[in-house]
Image 1 (cartoon, rainbow, N blue to C red):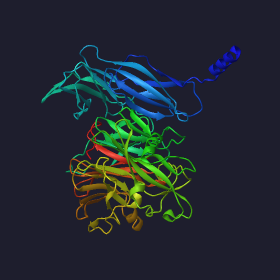
Image 2: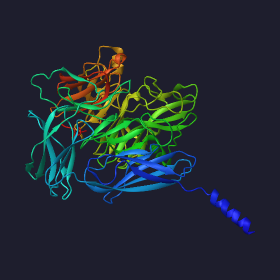
Image 3: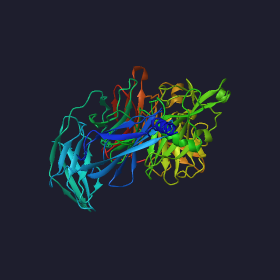
Length: 610
């Protein structure tokens, strides 16, 4: 009896699997100086069958934990701590997707000041065009910024103003400088209307890496036209996959680039960007257009999520993602737009595939229809709400060109349920209306811009109106081809007005007459009477098969991007500034790559107003 009991105990002891565990390690020991990036890696133990995914989060000075990367198959993460001295707690959570078992580990890390005494310090960064400026503490209630300029030049640039933190030093990335050039920079402390400058400090920028597209001025500024904002940011792409975002001054000289490559959708205040890039997700092997990221000027990740992780959270909202051949529905990838809202949330467009029965949109057999969702993510990139095109558009109305999509083709997000899908919507732009909490979405495959009853997530989701050919508005114009075709970068400008600006690729008009070019348009909308008056219609000197943007400038003109010209040669892009009468007054050309959007900004810290 005793031998039998002992044998049972030994068997149970040997047969019981140890629980999943994880250990977090850093490439550098604590403490480290402000501005240092730290490589984190996680080592799981007692792993059973199933895919492991890893989430990283950080707490600053015992505050609430903030997700910096949501669950991903990538177990390593390069952490860029906040630019101030503080005590951080970094946490990794590992999850087994099959068993749902989880484990955590946490690491304390201290960031210390670079200031020794009362003298500011300039430190080179890993980016050759960016410096870290660190200044001694300044009294709360006042503020701090950095003034910098190239040696021998009168033009000055200033970083964004930040509040002083009392006993904590002030630190900022200084960006917007040309390569291999001497600069001077100094601190400025602001108290009310008084500005107290510090002593000038020298800094010499490094050399540019290979692979940044050259830019040239093709139309010099016409006499009498005032200069626009000083910097042009390009979100570029190439069929070879080698392009990366970069910025130039008005002479076409590079003053910033992103490392690593990502497709920038929007510029945020303070030197941050919303971007989508390739990378691993939380479920499958798909990498194309999987990552939504907020990046800083150095290219460091501020926060990140992935399409599969968002799809997991949409299960409770009736979207059941099974992204494989034989699946019925799939959130396949982010594409074309991400937009920061006033409350800190982010709207992002994602592709939604659905297998539909034979007869749908004229198909003889069951067909994969690729629509879109607009996802509202909170400040941790967690799902707050969703708008689904399948709920509010007529599935019988196929795309105007009967478009087809495959993974990696035609600007489509990944197609995972079938070898090919009907490109039903191809939504490419959002505009938030602060006065009502609604948003606009450009749906070019339907040839419409629609207004959605959103009410900050509390609306019905119904389409309130459709603007475009065959929509709800009557066009008032003397142009024989007034309606846009494949509109990009829609937005009311100025914000709160009834003037809707957009980039018109002009596909339908160009098909009729090859001499017709892409256009910058502004429509004056009377939403009550459903009348749209074409108030601005500037030809841009080239035809773009896709892509492009338009932006109202402070001088009253518009900066427009003709994003993909002459695709048989690989493509190039042209940024065209037109005056209030639609006349071209300045243009720059980007050689060897195409560009999805461009942004005119006074500096690398100020976001365009829209």
